[in-house]
Amino acid sequence: MLDKLKYFIGTVGWFLLAIVLILGLAYLLFPDLIQNVFDTYF
View (cartoon, one colour):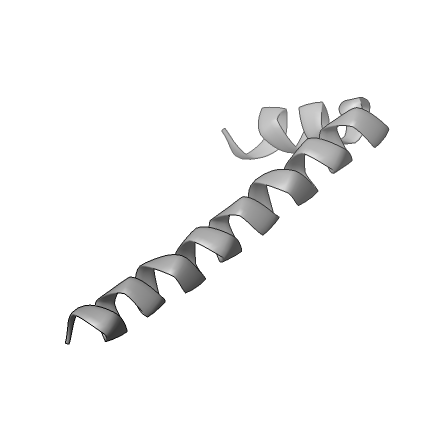
């Protein structure tokens, strides 16, 4: 049970880390694009 939980948290952790890295790269490469998206949706 605990192993499954640990595996699940690990998988989700890597997934979130990947998203953060991709967003960071996108922000560095296309700051204007990200700004436009934020202005449009938020």
